[in-house]
Length: 347
Image 1 (tube, rainbow, N blue to C red):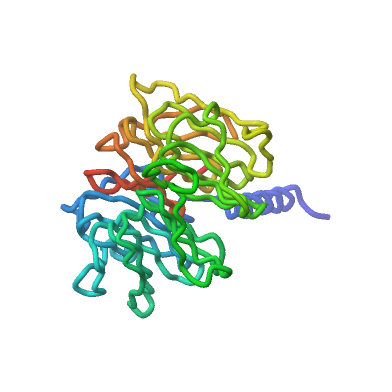
Image 2 (cartoon, rainbow, N blue to C red; image 1 turned 60 degrees about the vertical axis):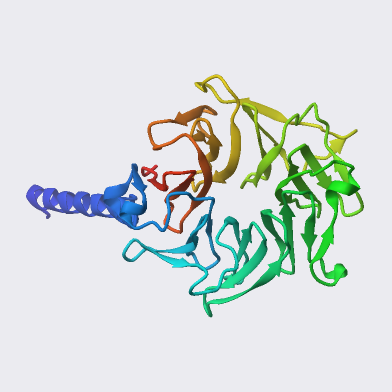
């Protein structure tokens, strides 16, 4: 016969074991690279070792390395082991221009660099730089596929190395669509092989056979940014207005208009129009917008569908770029005051 005392001890031991197993399965701050930073905003400037205080773009390469573009300085790699930045410029990689406008990583570890004179490709593993002087101000670069890259410029000319073209070929988009000096801001490929094009005069669609203008009623202003999120919705960031639009990327357009497009008006925004410079989806499915006028906006995608404007988290209201690192931190590139890193709280 087992005594009541023995049963109580066994029950206690079982309870302790169950609680131990349960605790081991609960996510703790120890899963973060720096648990003490969970939910914290951190501001970095040249006083903290940044190469410059103006950041035009941020990108995470295929090896999980974070890069930032510093106009008039060059590009820099973030060294997460000690928090320092390694600058690449005219001295160590002979970058022909330091006025870096944009960054675009490919799947091979290379970084495409847009500048005010053309684009260049940097291979960090060998520190080799190649590229092309286009005598044009490059505004955007998009890796369409493994063998295809598209480059856009401020004067409406684009370059594409589609295999059938036999290398990078200049396409006078502005002349083709009969718009003088039509600036190209962003490209976004979809699942049907088309390429959406954000321009200073609205939204265009490259079907592979023609350039089709999307109705100005849907997109009356310039389009600066795109994002196809994990739910296959295409987010479209407009310039000089107070809305962002999204539609499902798989949805077709009819008579030059989206079958289903939604406009989201951000609340608590002061009078005036905003430019949406960049769009990013974090690990929780939230959509972030980099804006000029109100800093960053977070769209709580799955829970409240409510816009939250983070005014106090930024030293200034002009944010040029957003990117995430491999640890889930979100980085914001500011127009004149450096970088802000946000480590989201545990969900």
